[in-house]
Image (tube, rainbow, N blue to C red; front, side):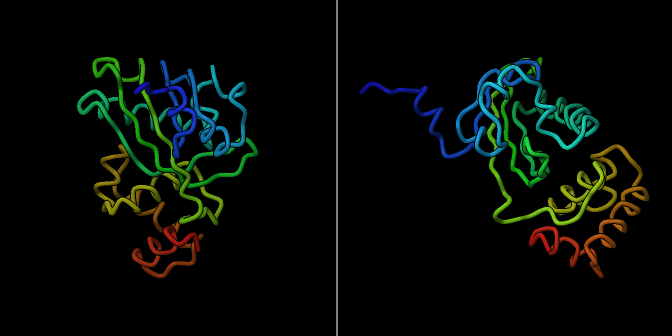
Length: 181
């Protein structure tokens, strides 16, 4: 049986990207549809164009590097940006092909979570990061350690999120973030 790997890549039911040094070297149709951009626009570009801000791109890259180095793979849920500027929740999973130089080359999958979780409030980059960590079930201290900020700073961001989502408790906030309410 002859297997056409290019066809499998192209028509995979999730978005796939092959990368080198955080630049998209190839992507499938699903990625183009998800981000609202053609392959010609995406290939050769930095992943930065898929992030709501350059700061988030830099911080997340720095956060992922030691994890990729240690484990060879990484996954999380985060807010990404479509070509039209719309932000949406996305599950991102990737594997470094060289653990010693994790950003050198990799394969990444992207799954649009917007049908299950919508972004309702205008959030800052740091609020998006804190929201994502809250959805992972982390405490303020754990979030602070992961984001390299104090737990008191995390609590300030959580309070802002609670105001923006009109949540009365932390559990209510998580519920509203999941529901996109």
